[in-house]
Image (tube, rainbow, N blue to C red; front, top):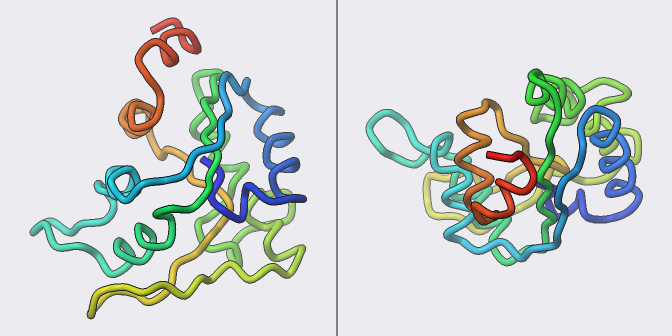
Length: 159
């Protein structure tokens, strides 16, 4: 998923080019993210073991809700998720390296820490670090079903 900054140039073109170098983009489409979708996307990583929201959860959900993003359905080899993770880099752009997608924010000197209105006790900022990607095959299976129909998934992957 291209986050709001990731949908802008020059980032969008560079992200598409780099992802296309390791996988096949089967579908790409613009989308305005709803609160329900943003919450579903970050639901597994947004809560602690007792079910309480982690400090970053409300910030990222509030930031993304109502924003224009682009959805990508990418196919590739057995190690695609690992390859994409390496290509993207760590979630904090300042900890990435030249050649990684999130390092583009450093190279272009773009502000990526966003102030957000959140409930008391939550972070008041989040990172727009250009992209979100699945961290496992299980996450990929869950996340693509948030936005893509079974027919689209079957057409792209033959599943």
